Image 1 (spheres, rainbow, N blue to C red):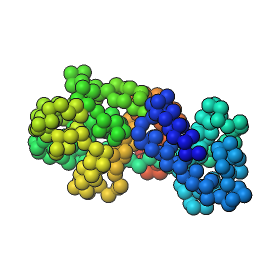
Image 2 (spheres, rainbow, N blue to C red):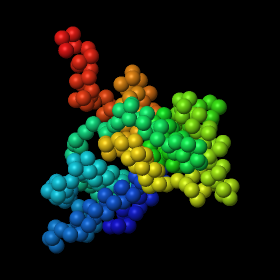
Image 3 (cartoon, rainbow, N blue to C red):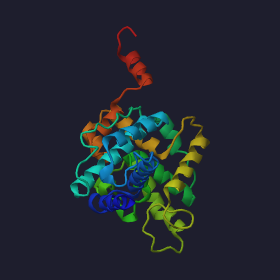
Image 4 (spheres, helix red, strand yellow):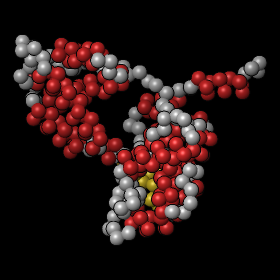
Length: 300
């Protein structure tokens, strides 16, 4: 049964062009489902994917709920199982699809964690001085807030992806879909300072490294490395909220929409395949609701 999972993962990589992180999530979710099936009582344990029934999947969902998995996690894992059985059916490896027409449990939609524009200003001003690392950090933070890039997209950028003259950056998103994003002037200036002065000093003897953002060894900066960088600056400027690299992406989208940006345009900038994913940023927080109410109601 593991062989079929491996075939499915190969299919996702070759045909769908899914990222390493997405592939790892599918692998983890399907392996967990397989372990669940293998731990079933002998009279209910399937010996092939063709023996898996709808009841097996329902029991799996109930177990996850009993273990108090987040609704979003349950929804993701069930979606992975459904995609897998659809692959098995289309490739002729099973006669009938036990997950067909099964509804994916609804994931509770929470407001994305954001920080205010004032807090963004403090965070972006945190990397001080002209040291190469400070120039790099300033460029990364400015670029992340200027474009709403995913952190994986940010660290995967090459020097050739940045056009300083036009003020654009090209990135490869999920499903290997390319998009070209505008960059505001302050971010472009920070990028220019880093590319022209900071990066050559970090590069050192690694003259063939194509990565835009480098660590102190002159190699490509990792997601974990950037997470540690942003965590330090958050502490330095005294922001109390839990801020991750994704918080700047959420803040970018929220601030753009509140400023009057078109939903479709924000969808394209974020690289969302479905506009419903972008619509979560249009939800109004209680604080913002109160702010709008106080500013607009004639008797407030």
